[in-house]
Structure formats: C-alpha cells, structure tokens
Image (cartoon, rainbow, N blue to C red; front, side, top):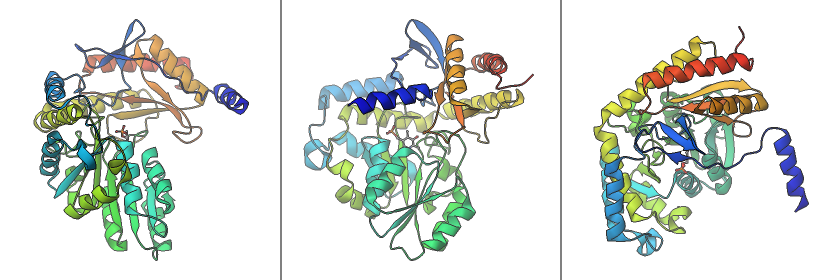
Length: 392
Ligand SMILES: *Cc1c(COP(=O)(O)O)cnc(C)c1O
C-alpha cells in the first residue's frame, strides 16, 4: 500500500487533497451552519429553498418512521415497496404532468442506473463535457460510445450526431443547470437536434428542479419543453432539502426501468420515512412560490454585486455563482480566508473543474437576506484584493 501514501503526498503538494469536515445545521437560521465552535454564513449548501429543517417535513418523516419502521427491509421489487412510494410517485407524475414517475435512492443511482439501462454496446451517448460525474459514470457502465461535446456547443454536438448517425440507439444527455458553473444548457436547441437526428433526450434537473417553473417543475417546464424531454431526472437532495431522486416520463419508460435499472433492482429502497418527507417537501415546493422569488432576487443581487466588483463569475443566472480564481492554491487560500471572516464557501479544484479554473463556488438560499449577501460580498471583495484576484 506504499503507493497510496506517495500518491496522497503528491495530491497534498498540489493543493488537491480533499478532507472531511463536520458541519452542523442551525435550526433557527437556516442560512447558517456551525463548524467547530463558530457559526458561518453557509454559502455552500444545495438547500436552495431553505427546506432542510422545515418542521412540516420533519413531522411527516417522524410519523412515517413510527408506522413504517426505520428501513424498508428489501428492494422495492421484493417487499420494500411501501405505500409512501406510490403516494409520492402519483404526486410526482401530476406535478410534472407526465404519464409516470419512479423514485430512486439518490441522483447518482438514478443517472448511472438509467443511462446504463437505456444504452449498451453499439449505442452512443452525446454528453456535455461539464455534465455531472454520475452521468459520466452511467455512460462508462453502459459500455456505449461516449461522444463528449464541448460545453453547450451545439455545433460540436451536431457534428458528432452526424458522425455517429448510424449507431443503433442515440441518447443526448445534459444537466439543465451546470453544477460548477451555474449556467443553463441550450435546451431548445438540444430538443430540435434530438428530433432531427432521432435521438432520445435526457435532462438532469438536480440544480433546477424546485427553482424554475410556476410550481418548481424545473427549467424544461419554464421553457415549455417538457414534451420534448424523454427522460426527465431530478433530485430531492437539493431544493427539496431531503434525499432521493426521480425519473419522470412515459409509462413505457418507467416499466422499462423497473425491469432494467440495476440500482433500483439490486439495492434496498429508501426508508419510507424519507419518502414521506419528500412528499411533504413536494407540497411545499409547489405551493410556496415566495421561496423561488426570494432565491431569484438573492441570486440577481449577489451576482451583480460580485460582477460590479470586477470578479469573473461566468455567465449564469442561477443560485450557483462561481468565482473563478484559476490557481488551485489561491482558491484554497481564498476559501480559508472566507472561513476566517465567517463565511463558508468551498474551493472547487480539478478534476471537478478543468485545470487552471479553480474557483470558489457560492450557492445561495432563499433563507439569505440582502444584508447578509451584501456584507458577504464586501468581505469577498476585500479578500479578492488581498490575494490579487482583483487588481486595484
Ligand atoms: C447532485 C447531483 C446529482 C447527484 O444527486 P444525489 O442525489 O446527490 O446523488 C446528479 N446530477 C447533478 C447535476 C447533481 O448536481
């Protein structure tokens, strides 16, 4: 095992080692967290709508815990499929206005399981270079050809669709909002290309579900494209504040996945209490439009403040705001200085993002106030000058 120590030393030397740290939630102010003894403004959470500590969700989970028990006891295909599952899947299909829905244990398993169930050797998957790792792993697992197109580059995708036009099945897959850049996929253009080339289209709404659309259905609905998407994926771990994932689509798709998606078949279903908590979160996501409005106002404010200060924050409009630093070590120092100033925001380094684009990734929540965000932006500016990310 000596090789491991040597490789780890190399990682540490390049400021690329990752470590696990303990964070604690603050129930009375969900925009914060506690690390060690200190309360920090939490600008690293995916709890976009501030639902993770919502009393109604906790109560629904507690109730189901005492009627259904701690675990579901088996795969859903054996005896693990409990009533809360069918309630949730009916509500999901209604919310997404689609024929059917299927709950997975998490987004990673949904993406890896669904892609590997849809394509295999002799097929091809067209995937944006910045797609989430769970999509990439699904493609590897499927053994289909991986045609990776440059980020949001429709012409490059068109060229690859042409090149692989004779493959058996074709799947185009994209994040709706990209997790490290916070920008959108060109969904209209992707829908047009999928029709032109007879491909299937899969969209991952992990960072857009709950945030876009009148009832939080996601970016596809906001753009009126829900009928162009064959496989609609989203998670309950981010905007919903809970855990788990869903696939929405046709009856046929769901029937296929129940028979072919290995993470569904060969793994124990989510605990029923989690599923009941998700159902309550789904009610809140649909009804409490004010959370989406607050989040959107917070994103606009924070983005314009950082960009006016002269930072490179990319070109998105989502609550994910990347502050591009470039150098790995400098990104790490930026994050440490932010923590010293009372703000938690993680440094994201390669291989999660391309070389020389290390960044601080801020993610905002409906729980953050304008004052908190303005004060944070002022501190970020001061540190930016000190580290030479901004020039006077
Ligand atoms: C977080 C994320 C996932 C994985 O979801 P989990 O439920 O956390 O496993 C999948 N896709 C994207 C784009 C994500 O950001």
